[in-house]
Image (cartoon, helix red, strand yellow):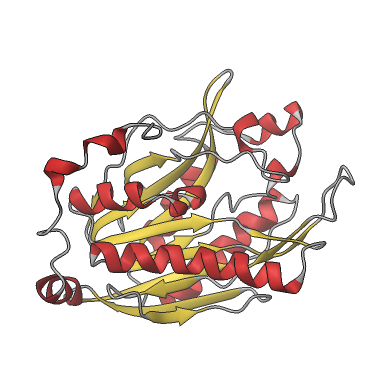
Length: 294
């Protein structure tokens, strides 16, 4: 398979779980109707981004894997005959919760999962309160449409994560995401934040000679505690090719279901002319395992 038709579902979310899931399923069906073979959903798409504040009641949103959501998304993957990347709040055990991506094969079977490794703790992104760091490692998942290097949101700032996926044979890097602006930031700062977010991921595409698929949520989600004015999720989901070229860019303020053609054969051609993996000095990188070289 050279041309892979990728569906991306960019949506807003609210506190109505059933409504959010229905919206995701409608997006999957629309992408499938337009020929998608792989559909990617955004981070934590079954509910609000609850990490804006630290509240123990929010742990009630977590669910087991397998569980109700995996049953629903398994069924829609089979119905639509698509490989599906989802993102769920996993209850592994009492007191152990993960931010987990789950991948389904086109027959509805669960291929595997990835537990988010890098966990932020920034104002309005209090994820360390909720999520135990992943312990599965950086392992691509083999599917009928290719070997998927699935990571989650904050992982996208770390070239090490992308590189390890690439070195394990990933054919595409995938980032379900939830990121946006705080309203008090200046427009200049908002532009800098968004540009940095896109640039670093396009850099992963270039450095590894792999396409990147990033799906972000959209819309304003209020801070129910009143500490901030909430997060304006900036959407702008995108697909980049193995030289970092933009193949698709979604809007910043609309829900969109889009299908993008991705030529997987280009990765090998790009790696032949830009053989970055060949020229790595693996004998000299030992200090990368240190926190800091002092």
